[in-house]
Image (tube, rainbow, N blue to C red; front, side, top):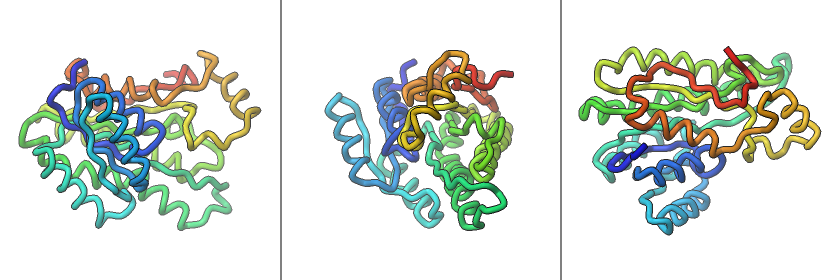
Length: 247
């Protein structure tokens, strides 16, 4: 699945799934623009990639800030001449039961997890249309498919990403641009690191494969959807959940 000559923009790339996607795509030959709020972690990631012979550049970006998205993507396109692959991975949680959830926590999760994806797609789509080739990959969640108590905002944002994925797939399919989603299940990341061992053990019992997933499991799915091997797949949600949700 060679991505040689391709340029990818990955949001939320400083840790977890985004970081693993950057490492995997560069391993497959892509040049990556890694974007996140934490400049220090991004610089460490770029150093790791370049030390391994890859090409990566860091862009400090808060995707929840619309005024930052347009100039950042514009800078990335100016740097590389194009964006072939967009991975909308940035995401946050602000968990609370709906009766106690503050409007600010609802708004911040929807802005970061869903609205940012729309904004980034809008900024890269011109480059993809011009070259009549593109891969848009949105990182959703199993909880956007089945819901989760205490995560009304998060589940709604991730379900919204699935609808966005299908709408964009229909809009740009005739231009050889695909838009797909990857829906991780329980993945071992910084976001889940704070959960207790008992919770993780109980979660593993609900997974037919008997283990929680790794960021690399998700990155492999992203690499496939970014490749030419997935050229006839669009509007699809690829589940990476160990069988946690089927059907």
